[in-house]
Length: 325
Image 1 (cartoon, rainbow, N blue to C red):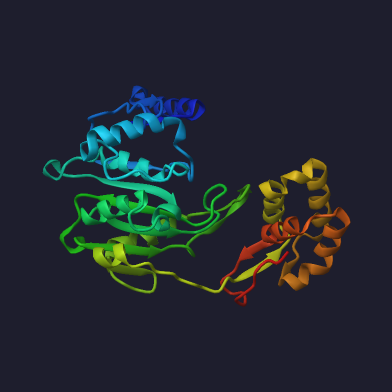
Image 2 (cartoon, one colour; image 1 turned 180 degrees about the vertical axis):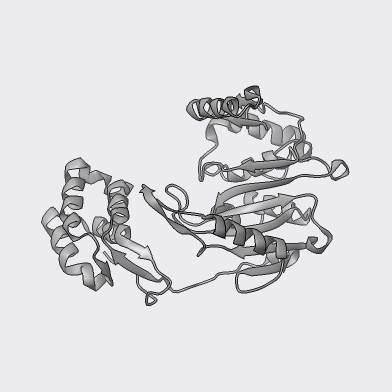
């Protein structure tokens, strides 16, 4: 097992974990993998990454642009450069560069993204050219849509499976799996992270992936159709509102409410806490919540954020419920 980490604390934790498990801790390197690739020229069988979402690459744009211009597709970033404020596709290109060639058995990688790499960028943009390069090489195998609130401070998330060793039946095709409703509630939420996979959810997603058959949760598209059609899926937003430990934690950690300060947030949470367990339509909570918001003096945008923090997705709720200001 090998890896590279930019954050010194995460790097130290990882090396400690490697030592405790009897692995060679020297295989974990500290540094920026874009500017100083610790494994230049090394190829791997399997690769995994959960890169930060929407992080700009301005600080390391010099070596990245130099490699792109000087090496082209012989380097890591030859397919294109994404917008400066989102380096997600740089991580993916970096990983693809470390895949083994087909004649050596090929490789498979998985990477977690938000929605940006899937949808951002019109024809001719850096993102579009990178997607086109991956699809035309028939490397994109599967895209799995994940539940919300599975990661910290993110909305829609996906993981991509990319490989240069597709089985015969998968060649020329992309599998799309909808796993958004497969989750369980965490015992204790960590800020906005309130959901997790149970063993049965992982087993079911693995089964759907392995079967490679269309159903109400799986679509299989040709590369051409996936690459050149822009599809908009609109589903009614089904929400209920509740006052629970989870939603109170969401109120306290919501960045848009941070301007209230500790005193204001304490007043907000303390005013709601006596009503723990209250749940239902927005109208059911409105008499209590509206009075509290008026007493504390929240602005209209802050009121809207407050209602959003108290909302919970519920497939069984009536449609077209949207938090209002």
